[in-house]
Image 1 (cartoon, rainbow, N blue to C red):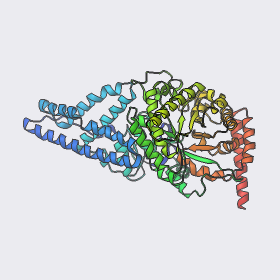
Image 2: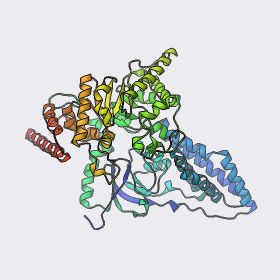
Image 3: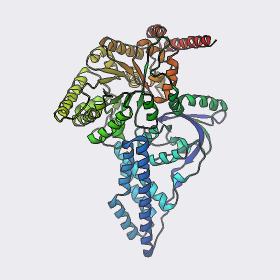
Image 4: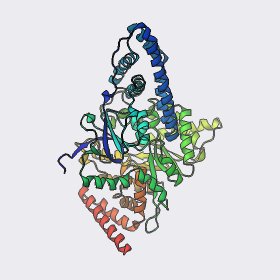
Amino acid sequence: MSPSKKIIKSSVISGGIVLGNARVILPGDTKVPEIAITVSEVATEISALDSAIAETIVELTELRDTAAQKMGSPVAKIFDAQLMIASDAEFLKNIRSKIKSEKRNAGFIYNRLINETVVPLKRSKDAYMQQTAVDIEAVGSRVISHLSGFDKCDLKFPPNTILIGKRFTPGEILGFRQRKAIGYVVSEGGKNSHMALISRGLMLPVLLTKDIHLHIKDNSRLILDGLKGEIIIDPTDTDWSEYQKLKKKQGSASVARIKKLTQIPPVTSDGIAINVGANLTLPGPVDEILSSKNIPIGLYRTEFLYISTGRFPTEEEQFEHYSEIASLYKDSCITMRTFDLGYDKIGNSDSWGHEDNPALGWRGIRPMLEMTDIFKIQIRAMLRASSNNNIKIMLPMISDVSEIDKAQKIIRQVMFKLKKENIPFDEKIKIGIMIEVPSAALCAELLASKVDFMSIGTNDLTQYTLAADRMNNKVSNLYSAFHPSVLNLIAMTVQACKKQKIPISICGEVAGDLSALPLFIGMGVDMLSMNPGKIFDLCRLVKKIDSTMAHHLTESVLSSKKLQDVMTKLQNYKLELEKKTIAKRK
């Protein structure tokens, strides 16, 4: 390790790997001095304010249009909300009044009133209020930039720059991306913030560590590892070389390489097709590539429609969005998961009270079965959008058969009403569930008899089986989807689906893990759905695997007593596969 090399563990806001040089943007870059003005200067200050507001509205309108083009209308609504803030008539009237009465410059008055507005919002435990504060500050920053003549987005930096700051607004993320910024390190924010949604949609890595903007120097050489959640400051030349190779396999280049695949779904060496799908959170640049190859969407997370606005979307808003996605993937299939929300994603609100342990609380299908009006609106929108017959509906975090019965009853009620109204929909639409908790895996055969398909969410299944939060560094060493207990629950679920003759997929992170591929082929999993960046390498590996050999490997692995035994068997299999590949080349 080089004397200056430092590795900092971080939370992953948006995944990926990038290598570049740091540019630190401190929160104090914009100064707003207090300047006393005369009566004759009041009109000039108010005119400057009005001009700054007008310029801000023009910019936000352009950003909204860009977002709509690149990521769809739901993301564009983030900027619609900021436009409403920028043009708030009562707020602007109050500022003009303060400029007149206090005889102070427009920038100072505007900045002070912005701060007075956001302070109580930031203290709120309501995630929506906190996000509103961020949006208000984002608008305020733009207005003050125009008043002061300083604009963050005018900052000069070379290509392959990684920007470091307290946080960045959605507008800054879009603006800096056009100037070739490749990633971000922030001190504030969350996985469900607008910044996170925009970054993931644009496939830009973002890592979060408290006060990190105070500890990285300008022009430091950096590696952001959004797979491990690590920031490597001043890496060695060896690190740099190794990560350059890894980036080619993991980043957006991997998504672009999907175009080179000649056979989808890929086929094993003995002729068994392995269906491959993609997990998506929101529309983005990857859609064109996936749809052109007819790659299905094995998991479409609809909760971003809530997270992007802080409210449940209307039926028409959802219908419009689901229809756009269904049309985009008209030659394949989209599995839409109903809202998977909980206190950890929403925080205190009118709908969610405080929960001390949200992972074991009111989340997944549970709130939707109580908030039936909201659930019915979403189901109705999905059904209306299903007239092309390429939408499936998936219910999250099922833990008991009674939840399936309740959900299906609601779905039948919505279908009945649509028929009465003569509104077309796919009357044979497939309804499936996610297996994410041990109780569901243990009762998999009973659950499988009630639904059309199942999908195993290995991230949560691993967490709940091992009682280990993968984001908690103190117990992350215990978290592994390869633990014998987890693998046996997966195998049990697969066998239950085979017995009931329904499709079974895996859509957790391990679905794209090359080490796990022979195991899942050996188990007989019907589809693996993963981060799009992992599809290319997985498809290339499938054709090297013999399904009979994989079946024998799976039997051996499932008899293992310890995690280390599993990993040793997988490593030995990998070495054997490499030897055979080399022998064939000779």
